[in-house]
Amino acid sequence: MPLEHIVVTDLTQAWAGSYATQLLADLGAKVIKIESRTRPDPWRGGFRGERGIQAYPSDGPGERPYNRMWLANSVNRNKMDITLDLSNPECRELFLALVRQSDVVAENFTPRVLPNFGLEYERLRQEKEDIILLSMPGYGLDGPYSDYPAIGGTIEPMSGNSALLGEPGGLPQTSGLMYPDAVAGLHGAAAVLAALRRKARTGAGSHMEISQHESMLSMTAPFHAHEWWETPAGNRAPAGGDARVEQGAPGQWVASAGGLTEAVRSIAEVAACEHLAARGFFVDVEQVDIGRQTMAGISPLLHRTPGSVRWGTPGHGQDSRRVLRELLGLDERTIDRLEAEGLTGEGPPSGWQGD
Image 1 (tube, rainbow, N blue to C red):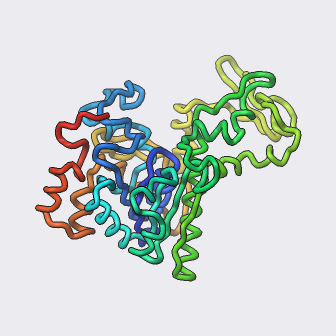
Image 2: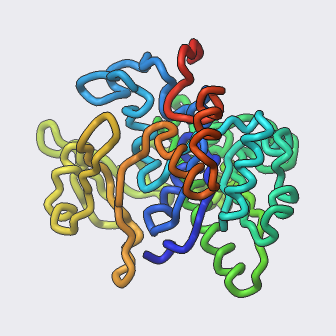
Image 3: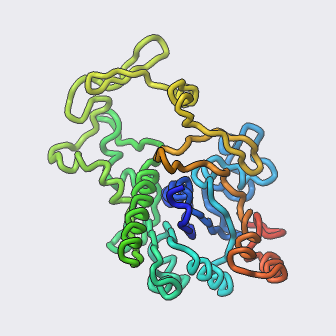
């Protein structure tokens, strides 16, 4: 696969960063996702399974709901997962040992987090001079908003996108999909590929910054260039024209644009699409604590060196012992001690009473 020689140490969480690193993993990169034993990726939904039945498969949250949350499972396939408590000095040294074996480190914290751990870019360069660091803060590494936390649901209104959605004269709306995260993820993966190309030519690493806010602005760029565009237009095309969505046969809707008309499909109808089936787009993946789960396949289709879905999302901390033993050379006694201290291992520490 095209990236099978690349190692990524992945500190990202939720959607934007995790999607960027999944795109790299789908193309063969060895991605090692790091979580805390007591603070898992929020897209796992916490340890208690209190998100409700819609967050989990139809048979409920199960004994380990944090391995069954559909959000986390949608963007973490093809990765390994370990747990390290970066507030602990010994774990920070283990993290730096991973950096020495990595080509890329990815994170989507607010700008203060890595410096608070003493793990800013210049510190990483001390361990590996040509390291590539991908930072994906909500509002960038500097500026008045830089320390604001952000998710797609807040980036969307802050980028002006919510002002473009809805009916004329009505209230602003969000899409409900938080897709600024996915847009930033695409930009993040593209930035890594560019940095890897530069490194191949010059031998130099990079620190790349993807502001999720500015990434979303690139999607609304035509409206920023249109000086009088201020209000939502409902289903009308931005440049005018007929309504883009209208009722067809009873119970059906059709969308029109550019002289073309297509049916509005439900998610179930998309999953049953004969065209996508013929192209083998959807894939069945074995997920930890779930079994077979159908998900979207790989869209960058390289015909000579295609990516592949090799395995599903790993369980929380599932690969901790393997990575610590095989990549970092720790002995079993040391790993046992770190697990007993709650610094690494699978799932929450024994007797954990947190979220």
